Image 1 (cartoon, rainbow, N blue to C red):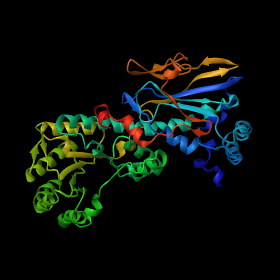
Image 2 (spheres, helix red, strand yellow):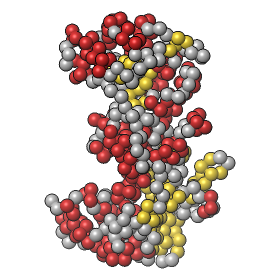
Image 3 (cartoon, rainbow, N blue to C red):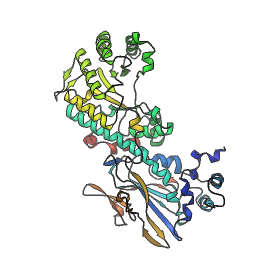
Image 4 (cartoon, rainbow, N blue to C red):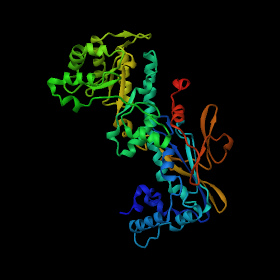
Length: 475
């Protein structure tokens, strides 16, 4: 296979097959097609818009169409479609090369990344800038709709941040540790290194803890963030069980010896989590843990069982072995050199259950952190937030046409009409349809035009926009 036909190198391949035929299907005289992207509903009432900049930088910037890529696509589509069906738009793509130097004649306007927008609102629009390329905006639908993934991961992550913040506000003296309360364990469960990078960086919009290295590299390369996430030395079962069951205590001690300063996490359920907490951590290694008080934190990690019950019992055992205190709100705290992280079974719903159980037993939410893998980066899809890309406006034979669909069988799929603006009215986001909006109040910003990135957002400003309301004054 030649380099020219690699899907990751050729914009002509980044579309559903039927898109290849659509240039023949618009009404004669069509010169403009304008489409939009939105979350039509879903699990969470608002979405964190994030990830479009990556798609633009990765796929759209510069001279992305060449005669070599056109020829490669032509050869593939001749075999892909039935013999005799002349469906490939060789003329249209060649025009882009000859007229525009291979740069895509479209304009994309979008809400600034990191903005939290209630669903059922327009998030970005796409429109051709050359009347001969009316077919191009929707050819790019397949690629652009993939923003659903980073957007949904960021939304899911932020929702969990809101839950944790709520319990910290109720049971802790401070929310200062919130950025490190949900750690990304999802690298191995991602479908690819690329998806781990995309999803991992989306989580880092809300938190600063991660073990998904691809996410920090992604944030660096596409959003200019030198270091978006941080980790600590941590044990896995292999590094503990390789010592043997009878030497589990030595495996634990080795962790303290090897990492005498800073935070260190140790999985403790390889055999008997209760014995590990009571006898090994609580008695045999007690003094060594206490001696680290000014040097670092030991984080005990249970990794099996019913999470709310296990976390509370682990806290109760550790609390009986180490000196605890009560904070200003009357909730118990382990000493500052000892914490717990629950990394098994963690999702939006489970975090609430664990923190509520802790609260009922008198423990502050500040004693625990969480690690999430599959539920954070994989247990979601395009329908989690019901993401969709639809045409809303066209110009045919010089006349503007408000384009929409309204299926009799599903009113939830009714699409928006005409040119759209996103405005703030009475403190709420409102999508104004049919060109009735005020362009001067439109919150959609031109981010891409004719092959050029117009707006380059930094990770820091995205994080500030996405911050939960209770903490925005501190961001």
